[in-house]
Length: 489
Ligand code: SF4
Image (cartoon, rainbow, N blue to C red; front, side, top):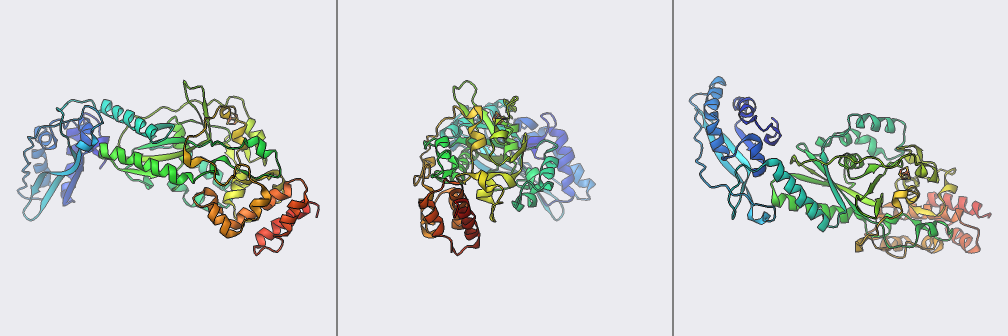
């Protein structure tokens, strides 16, 4: 049985006859989930559930149906529903609303009772009823409120799309996986089906709310650091606090505000489950897919462009909110990101081979970094921003005002030699709360060894490498030996 709110506006009677009655022969309890006053309009329950059942003659229908199912003498004593309906004129009185479950009828048979219950009925107070409120207008008002709450929570933009992917999404993902482009991110292949079937994560999902939050911090200029071999370059998104925690907490707050205002089921994701987040975000117009595969956005009417330096998170929700249209691509003939990639990881427009990507090699990949690629990594010790830095839409990227994204431990222009000297305890202490911590001390040293190997020759750097020649990790030792050879030792 489909959720009631998905039924056509004029199909209430037909829906109940065809979808509800047949359950009488097989169920003992029938729960009808009514989702807020907004959706009563979809099924013409404008007088309340019980009266609507009565008016449309459903009682008799149930009786007939029960007889057909072999049940004797059924009755449906509907509870009188004479309470006035109240509806808030806006969405600013969520606390006046209370969710509840309301019994609307029982079907008595010789030895069993079937219960019809309206779930999540809303009790409103304080304002006169607006019986014929337009459901779409109400939902549109809700969306306006959601966008306002999102802005208050620090999100730069929020869009809503259907919980559907393009028909070829599964095929494209499969082709990418079959070509091995995911490297050793085996979880991507393991959860491929779930990725392309959002209902696997939330069975009743109807819409995906996508939101973005800028992170570009007030940090040393990226190109300056990249041009100085003595310094370590850390991807600008990782200089502050771990975004997973920040974005997730804010999205959870947003989801709670929504569910305080209307009865709805939600589920929040921030890189925490197999969700094709950029696909959903693109479909709902949060941005367009750049040729580097990241989402790119520009804010219409604003002198600044958002580039692609923002985090994305999603709320799955079971309300049929109005959806936003996709935006058109503004890449044109540009291929700057393809040519700027130091390791040639963007093998074609919109196709990334993760096995060559510096972000993958320095963060996701746990083994040795392929020797052929090491010289191209330069001084990038955690992630890479090159394809974003060259993008013309990045030029006016706004700086984040979030304190949590502010640079920690001077990692925006840290010296390679000093970072290489960190003990494991120091690494854990200084990267507490940072996304860098997840790679662990061993990969941290591996990455810095590569950068030291690529740096101009200096006795100080050679000495730093020699100090780790006998490191307990074979992975680190091998990269140190490679770096020493690069330093001419
Ligand atoms: S660099 Fe050019 S091709 Fe790449 S995302 Fe930006 S505009 Fe598109």
